[in-house]
Length: 91
Image (spheres, rainbow, N blue to C red):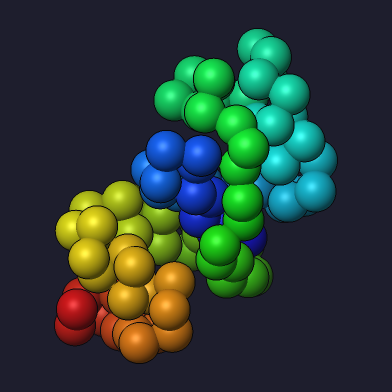
């Protein structure tokens, strides 16, 4: 699963996981299991999720989303563009 988090200072963080609840808890606790980029930026909010059949597909999607501009990520979150269009690079 691909997910996008919004931090307290409105930054966006994109990641992948097989267990969103566990991963969100790791990020929220701010310990060594959470991403360094998110430490001290709580509270966090899950603003987007997209399921994938396997890790390989999720990794490709993560790469593509991370290359998007902030405006394009916001359009993805709002539902104005689809994950399919991101994967097809039509954003």
